[in-house]
View (cartoon, rainbow, N blue to C red):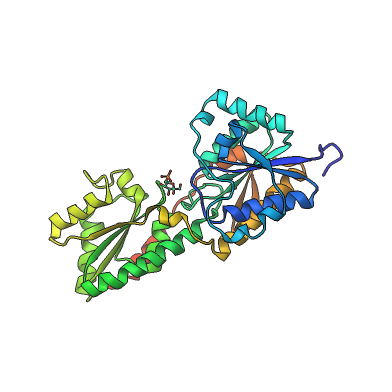
Length: 341
Ligand code: F6P
């Protein structure tokens, strides 16, 4: 800390947007590292909504004991319409001033960070921690919650496979991810899917849906597992296909085989966080408080090549992360097929 750096006495912490397993571990790390540095920590409930409506309390080290093994977020979370308005954001900053906050740690995804940027422009020092099961934050290789969500989805698909194989059926499984296919790709690789449909690819029904089923059948498979990222239907990647159920009907019309359709939905957001999520969240929470205490702010705490990095929030929001298409190619290569002559 330089001579001129103002001593940080009190900070706030909130979780915002869709919850992600591991958020609690990040909250715990923020509270504990703050207290270790003689900084008070105010927990703000229900994200930016709670900030605007003065929904806060002073947190103790004891109350965050053992929360790191629980999914969800003890601070609750919300998506706030009011915070989208200038008036709402000014109100939020006024509350922070009233509370005497020297900084705010905002845990969430891109939407949360856009909000944090606006607060920083109004003079509040902020630090963001990426937490979303979608893994779609451009400035960070990894976001808290992704690993747990992958494992949950994999467990569900493994169970589905047991019954699909007994009945020799075709299964369509939709996984979350909003407009990103990271979850679908990792799940698809890990369950040995017949096909994975990603929003990042140009899709062709014959090439990407029917051909993989045929290839698997010729190679001896009698059941088929297709993993679909929810963004595929959101973006209407196949004409007239708005839901995964429409896609099921399209397959039935084309080849007479009616797939069972399973939407994993919010199941993927729950459950005990994995070691990776607990450990990453702890490192990020720790680093966020270190940054504020040492006088650095308006940053996102991201991971790059496995290391924790501090990225200025304005730059962070401009960064793009592309899906690893070489992993998609690998998945195709590892599928069961007969040689083509
Ligand atoms: O961003 C996390 C996420 O779970 C997305 O994968 C999904 O599209 C969205 O949130 C669902 O949001 P909600 O819980 O508000 O329906």
